[in-house]
Image 1 (cartoon, one colour):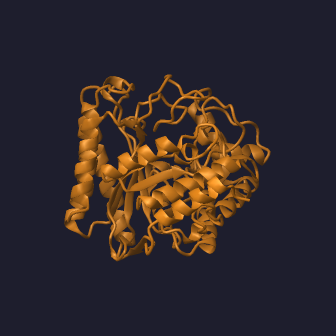
Image 2: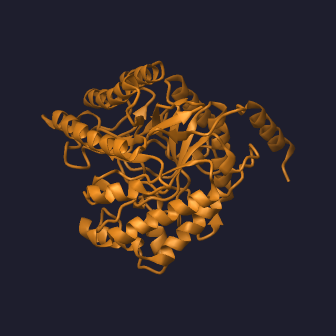
Image 3: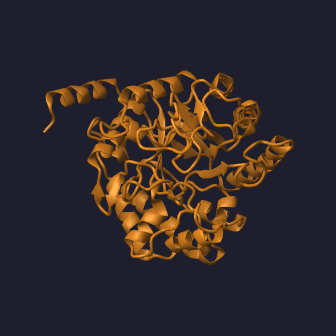
Length: 426
């Protein structure tokens, strides 16, 4: 039963949620919203449901400040993690966790997810919710494999890369692990928001369900079962929700073992509406974490080729394209609040300009970019995240602040605001 205070909060939220909003759709290879092309500058805000909760890590006042700050600079699209999986206390993993064991959920975090969705709707923001993760920082593949009886997952920092990939590749062939994940999909997609009263399947604030964060096969030997798993998951989501778009969350060709044919195959699935790509120059060998001489020029050249390849495929398939993650290190590899971002600003300007040019052309399938990631007012207390520290854009396995855009990064914020204005005023 709702308390008087909570009932009042629900009523206020319902009164504030805009009405007569249309679902984002796809037509002619473009994203449409209210009958018009929907192009956007967005960000990754994976920790939003934690901030929106009333439990550990919750800070609804900060959530409101962050959403208002983003809205003020024209950021209208948020890519968000539904929740972390598995036991708590793992050094490199998001904490607290949502799904503590198969079918066992932290209701405080579910409440946070609901509250966040209502707050996003109040600000006329669109949300992409991703349901899984191929990386260890939120449990993801490794959690499901362990629950299906596999040995404990190795941490990527403690084993050779090939050993890590070999373990993660088992997800594509482990039917028990996949079924546990599909159970999770059913539970979340069929949820009803306790603040708005809307089933998630009927909520126009949700732009798209996403299968996972950077799902990979991790081995050429499992490409076929990997593609089948993605297709099965997309079909399940479509059967549960006929209103919303579906995307994969892939990095693109690089996330498909460098196999453009595999990327084309998974993107061609009739239940996949949006082509995704992510761009990580310093993770892919185009730049060092310290941004040495020549790194920026090389990164821009490789990035342009990568974007063009995916936009060309979007045109061929008649599907919109979203760059939903891109990041670049701070100057010299620093990561504190207030440290310089000269090279990053040049790289951001290059990416954002691709979206502005797409808006000018009118028919380009490139519809949006989501930078990684919003740190906002966070003040990281440690190089590595520890419970009790502020959440910023960098997950627990990465140096805090390395890729985050903070509220004090005023030059970067001006670039974002300018691109958002030019994109939406064509």
